[in-house]
Every structure is written in structure tokens, then in C-alpha cells.
Amino acid sequence: MKKQLIAGNWKMNGSSQSNVALVSALAAGAANAQCQIAVCVPAPYLGQVQSLVAGTRIDLGAQDVSQHESGAFTGEVSATMLREFSTRYCLVGHSERRQYHGETDAVVAVKAQRALAAGITPIVCVGETLAEREAGRTEEVVKRQLAAVIHTNGHCISEIVVAYEPVWAIGTGKTASPEEAQQVHAVLRAQLQAATAHADRVLILYGGSMNAANAAQLLSQQDIDGGLVGGASLKAADFLTIIAAAR
Ligand code: 13P
Image 1 (cartoon, rainbow, N blue to C red):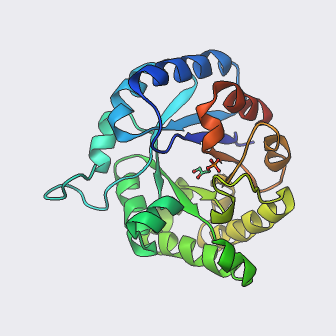
Image 2: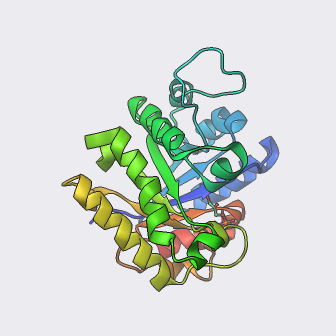
């Protein structure tokens, strides 16, 4: 059976000092974990956290990647650069990137392609806003977002990780119920099945106010293969509780 993946998204948090304390505590507490573990850190800390996770159960992740390979793109970080730090995962299309940086489905699809070409597993984020959910458009929105990535990445699609993050549940303390989340995950699984014979291999994570109290129930759903954790990944005890709930 495939192992679940618990990935922390630190967002724009951390410091050289606090990173040492957090990662050391995670490494010690997760030494015997059943699941796969990753931390997606701000780009300036990739080198530091690469050293901190070396020889531990924790893999390194980035939070974004440029859609371009190299060149005059001030401020951007390429997939090849990320790979130099042994980056295993990279978030692409997080709703905060879509919302604040205007990333379109097409841009997200190319970013996933760049990551794959560099040997990095893209964690492709999809999810509906509250208005879209209330209008009954959840399925249509997540399917459109994933379709762009499938279209651009073809047979490589079985190499991605998908994260379903309802925008209304991010940082709000409101979680999708395990049944609501499972329903969307099943839709995404079916869409992957139509695109690849290896859809069962693809991990589909849930994200949005996952915490120490609600993780076990969410992670027990059939098509929930792990979690993408924001706020609770910054507290070692909470993140370790979520890791312990995963299989
Ligand atoms: P929270 O866990 O803080 O709601 O954030 C979820 C998220 O956006 C992870 O990528």
C-alpha cells in the first residue's frame, strides 16, 4: 500500500534560528513515522533546511518555481536551482499564488512541467473559493484546474501529487468535513483515472485547517492520501501529532 504524505507549508514564516529548533524536533519525533514527510520552506532557507533534514525521515520542498528555465526573470527561482538543494517536492498553484500573483491554470501547468523535468515532484494545488462552492461549482472548478495540468503533462501525470485545498478552509479554522473532502478527492481520482492507468499511484492530499484534532478523521478517508498543512506545521508537537495519525 502506498504511504501517505504529510507535507508542511511554512508559507512566509521561519527564521534561521527557529528553523533549527523546528526541524530538529520534527526529525527526532518522526524517526519512526509510518508515512512520508516533507517541509516546504521559503526559498532562502532551502540550503539551511537541506542540511537539517539530511539523514532524517524528512524530505525538502519548495513553495513555488518559475515557469521559465533561466534568463531575465528578476526574483524568480528555477527548477534546476531548486534541484541543486536536493528539493524533492515543489508546491505549484497554491491558491495564494493564484490569488495574489495572478497565476492562471496554464501557468500552473507549465510550472508543474518545469518541476517534473528537473526531477522534482510538483504538488499541484487545486480548490474552490467560498463563492464557487456556494454556487455549486466546486467540481467544475477543481476539474478545470487539474485538466490544465493533465493536458500539459500527458503521461507524466502519474508522477505528480495533487493537493485539494478549498480556499475557504485555508487559515480560517473551517475544515471541509471528511465526507466533503472525500467527495472531491473521488472526483479528482476519477479524472486522473481517465488520464492514466496509474492513477492509484497519485497521492491526493487534503489541505485547509488540518490540525492535530481533525487529522485522523480526514486521513482515514479512502481517497485522502495525506495532508498539506499550513499553520499547524509550524508547531512541532501539532505537526508530529498529524504525522502520527497518518499511515
Ligand atoms: P492552513 O493549514 O493554515 O489552513 O493552510 C493550509 C494551506 O494553505 C497549506 O498549503
